[in-house]
Length: 73
Image (cartoon, rainbow, N blue to C red; front, side):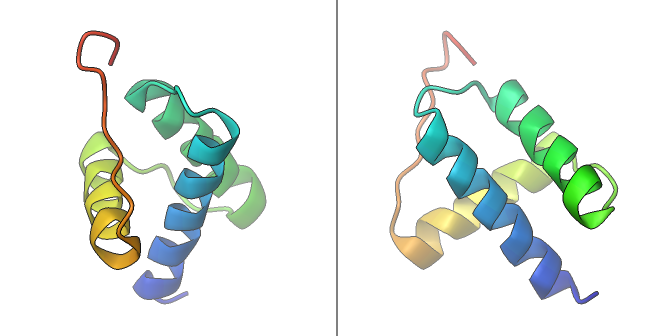
């Protein structure tokens, strides 16, 4: 599977999780994305840095600002 397809799938999972739970910690988001990646697509887990890169790409591609309350994340 191409890396672009994997990234798009991750970004869709991220957006869907944020849409469902607008207040979600970074760790919980990472856990939910990893669970979905494994069970739906059979992909290996991603790390925090990959999640952060995907969030940056979502912001630049879709003009969606995703912010964190640092005291809760």
